[in-house]
Length: 470
Image 1 (cartoon, rainbow, N blue to C red):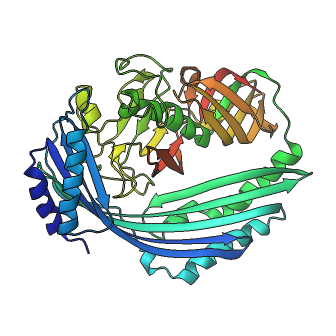
Image 2 (tube, rainbow, N blue to C red; image 1 turned 90 degrees about the vertical axis):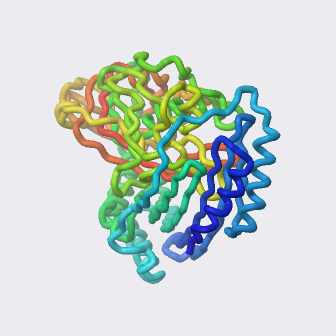
Image 3 (spheres, rainbow, N blue to C red; image 1 turned 180 degrees about the vertical axis):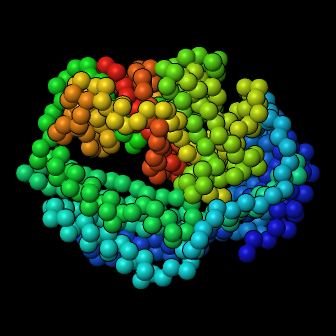
């Protein structure tokens, strides 16, 4: 049970030091995880983690301190540590914050059946049913590992400006790792499904059909797939490829802290500069949105870790650079308001600028229409490998599932099709987008110490003209 009086006591103590802003966050998480390897239970873990953090911001810098003990006495200790850090930081340029309204509210992600009501036996039976469905395909699956994880997090946030926000977020994910063998060769599939909600999430994933279909597809790719002749080709990207491109080559380079150089010694830079708002980077069909408010999404939240209300962020709008991800500090440095992009993995980590659910916006083409206009090309439905440089400019995607397109129709499978392209090259080559969006759950890594974050990637099908494939 979270003791809200701790927040009031600690904020009073922090405010005596006259910071620009003081924040206190209490957090409690219940987590269960079960692994199944080759049909046998590989591990079961259940944990409860509670703690708190204090962050203070002065002109001289930011101080952050956390503890797995949540009490008034521990809070006062964290205040002393955070204040000492901030006052000794000596930033080259004074720290400033965007002005945001104080908020008093509560929010939660809805669940129809709490994971706390699901027995361990029921969870194991579900994983075994996935393994059994995979084995019944007759496909030789040498490696099979399935992991089910769920966690419920309660947070209480307060700051010296008067914000008080209580939240409850239940999340669940399933990871599936499979290695298919045929004709002396192998193909691997690493998939993840996740969302905010309860046990009902599994019904929407339909994994008893999706996983067997994936195994049969991989076998077909090995046995019948042919290599793409290197050269310029028209390319149709499935929603999985559209999603990873949106996340890696649009989302990350549009993070305000990365643009301002904070990430330079940690996770890289950005080819984007702060004066590029309004510049064209893609075709008129390239609109990329990040929306934390998608119900049931893996990256769902209503208010960020600084108490700012979440909203859709239009990163590219019809090919033009439209806005960056911002917390209150990066927003202030660029003369705008925060767009609610501050997130933290847990109370142990400082909130930093993060994505939530990043996707390419739908267009008005039907799938048949998109493919039917291609005389010769390739459809890359999904990827097994991606790479991108530290400026998020040069990138490479290798297909897991791909097919040739001939005469406007899908032909035989294409094996390990590879796209190497720049970020402007990718988004500028799009000349058609379908009208249906689909999402994939993923874990986004960033920061030092590293923080993993639940996100969605996604999009419709995209048609790119004349890109280099091999």
